[in-house]
Image (cartoon, rainbow, N blue to C red; front, side, top):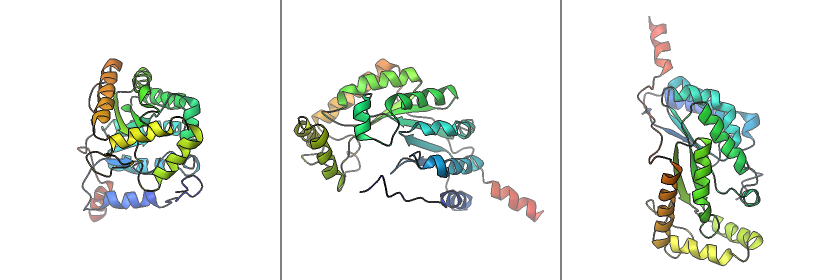
Amino acid sequence: LDFETKILVKENAPALLEQELASKKWKPQVIAFSGVTDCYQPIERQRKLTRACLETALRFRNPVAIVTKNHLVTRDADVLAELSQWRCAAVYLSLTTLDNKLSRQLEPRASLPEKRLAAIRTLSEAGLPVGVLTAPVIPGLTDHEIPRLLQEAARAGARFAGYMVLRLPYGVKDLFADWLETHYPTKAGKVLNRIRELRGGKLNDSGFSSRMKGEGVFARQIRDVFNLARKKAGIPEGGPDLTTGHFHNPHDRQQKLFSE
């Protein structure tokens, strides 16, 4: 669980992506960046693996969806803008809190809230479909911020919005409990109890339909607060409109040229 000092760098990721997209077996579909980790974490500034993968996706016009907590995504606005011309790119900036102190305690390697909002603004001004993901919502600690988070994101240019409730799989639940006791000892009990309310009495729920938003009365309250705040902020319901209709395999053309 040492996420900050032990980083697996997949140097061959762009080449593997090229190979996969060029395969006759590939069925065009949206590729999600940052499903497990942040594709714009600090090491990306030097390695530029995410950028190389985006350039590969552009050559094939294969749609991509990015979730990130980092302003570094603006570095690749040029490639993303080209992808978006084919309706092949969408970016979510993940925003947990507007409190700088809490942000630093929770996500010390991620951009501060104002930098994430600035990234939304920059990408929006570049013509990219960009939205906000209020995640993770930490019940009893950050859920009260949902309305303001959405208001500020809308002002910055967010066109769509989503949310996810905190998940605590495996050993993460113990790390989080220790973190609460260190930074918010007077709120620790309340927060953990609220999480249990969402997770059927446990700190984690691996059920596919409930793990992202939880279940029960408090989960419905969070959902209703989010939907009302989204409407008040003027952010329409639904997500980005991406398509695989423009996909093309440049290798097919090269093979035809060589065969002529």
